[in-house]
Image (cartoon, rainbow, N blue to C red; front, side, top):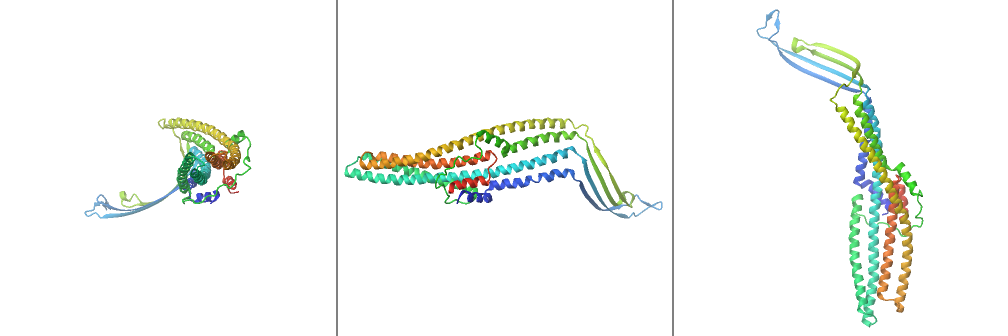
Length: 426
């Protein structure tokens, strides 16, 4: 599997990303909820009653009834009431606030998508790093074993001392322990990726060779990256939306001082009204339409208190926004330095690997002609394998820094991951 195929699995399997998607879908309902404050509110109510009335106090023909009958009275009623808000300042603010909340949810979902890319890439590169550690340990162990066997033969024939044999044996035992630790680290890191894609990853494709066009960045200067991040960073957009929502909360709380004006209409159709009193109900049909004006006069200073609370929370949101802006600028500068320094480090380690390989070849040749010892060969091997491991890890770190820099600039997407994947499999 390559990086893109693992990412495609993560889109379908990662529980954290699916949770973010569900939260995004839920937040989309804020807009119709906010719009509902401008639409009419219509209610329909109905009643149906049957009453048994004892007619003790009812006289018939001026003479009291000796055996008063029970009177059954049936009544029913249907009422339709409609209220159309004409002016409610609070509803206007709520609708504006709902649009901001939907915009914030959009940014939060983008951040979740970018976080998924970063988590998948980090877990993928961690596995590649562990695989490199194992490969280097295996190759080093194999080479040291050859040297160990040769040292034993040389000792047996008397051309070397026991010190060379002990040195080779110590190096062999140390490499064995390093190989065990590397295999354990690989299993742990594979299970980290398993938590994202819900399956145990097998063979992951690593870089067969280091790409040469490492300096190909979209923006050349650090200040330009910072400027782009201040315009596009989605975490900053989330905090900006939080400040705007806090500002709208102040307006919504203050709107409780405003009067409200509604258009109210009602239709009522009832039968059997008043039968429990008169013994015979009457039918009533009523229709009404009019304007209803409510003017708040005094609410115990509660509105003033909530306004002060909302103003304080607005100040908090403003300070949080400024803190977020500064932190993002710092992160962009750090990631830019990681990328540029990573380019220099990878290039230096590429040259170091070539030099280490040449040194190893020269040392092996020197041992054959008697001018280098067994320890010299072991040290040269150690240096060459360390350079190989460091180069692979530096390259993976450079690729990860590119992704993080794109995320801080608000430009991390699947295309960025595709480019990174191409730099791995070429």
